[in-house]
Image (cartoon, rainbow, N blue to C red; front, top):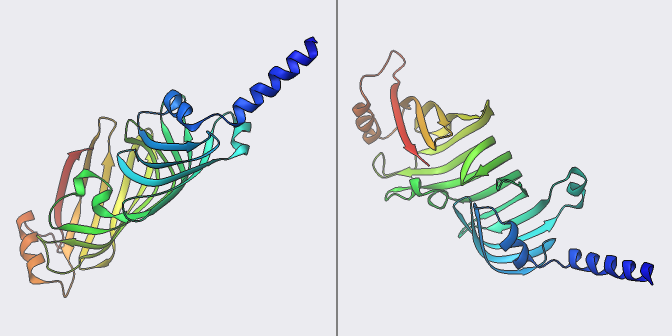
Length: 242
């Protein structure tokens, strides 16, 4: 009888483990960076109608456990979701301290959906994300290895036309995130560095010049940055907080 009782408890425990509801798991284990609604399925394989992850709005969220991750003592999920426009997929792991780790992250969306800083009248573009690793804690990146590309960048204050394609390549060293910013194609020659600090402040510092054939309005605006150096480049600096 004792063996039968123990076997029954093990079967019952296995049943609970396999069918553990996503709603219960979310209430117990969800990190502060994640907010989900209309959950269905289990902790292993489920969906959510919409949510926020690291401050970004997502819908049609789907996840599936990667069983091999259990051998490493952590839960990692293969996930896919859709921003209000665009798509995103990544392998997501949730740390015991509440951090959100994303690997093999690929996504695309309009620029103004990425962060409040881009939600300004007269600025638009198409954002592409490619990160081998991105770790968020309280919506702040603490590890970033990958690139951000903005295509079809438009700024009404600079030009009536599209400015071009620009890319930032990020790396992490000694707890600090830094990236190089440069033009891929377009009317601006840019060489800059972006830094994200643990206190949530960021800075973008570099040099910029109008390329030959750029609209006259761009050269006029760049003159407000001061005198050009012997290469025709002018220094710029933007600072803010995430």
